[in-house]
Image (cartoon, rainbow, N blue to C red; front, side, top):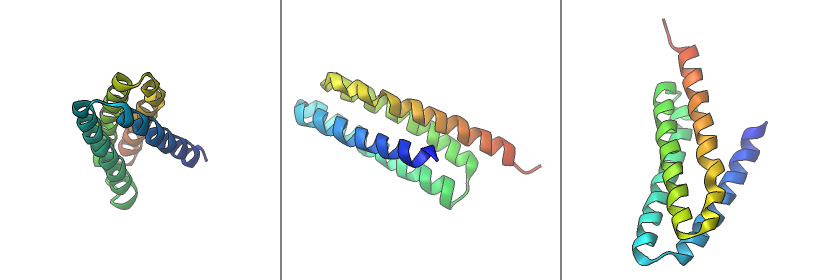
Length: 112
């Protein structure tokens, strides 16, 4: 299955790319980038909980959409500090795919 490989690769990318940017950021950029990263990680963890544990497919779709926007913002903020931040571009793309997939599962499994 591709999901474990993709997410492991993305987590390594997020850690390495944001760590590098945080090390080079000005204090105000550092604070904003750190907050964006924390929000992103919280959304990431919450999607897994909402989708797999709570089985709330509609809510999971909404969380995935928020995660996609957060990932795009994290990529932008990281790239503003360090050109290598564009290496995160695969992350919002993958989250967009997860949003579409979550939405499709939700539509197919709605009662009635």
